Length: 136
Image (cartoon, rainbow, N blue to C red; front, side, top):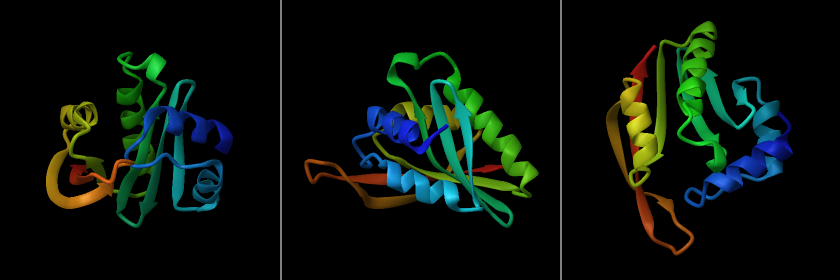
């Protein structure tokens, strides 16, 4: 999946946090610690360092949501993270992103932290982040 397509999908999915552009995805994909879990209608971008793996972002084309794509992406992330030696997965999610929180909870993630005013929405509103973890 090319950086341009990743940026296009990310823009279709996110306002807060702000979507990443092509250049940002080029930088991520050049990093040896970062790996991509692609799907025809979405992707998951992650980083693995030592025994931890982090979901950096997960995007599913709005026209193809509610079809189990995000569930597939998370499952494949877990598999790839284990192959890279990770035994713990974690992520940050906007506290008002109820669909994502529900997805992660359904996969066994638990909240382990709360970051107040972590994200800035386009209207300057501050949104908290939840830190979630999953034992691989």
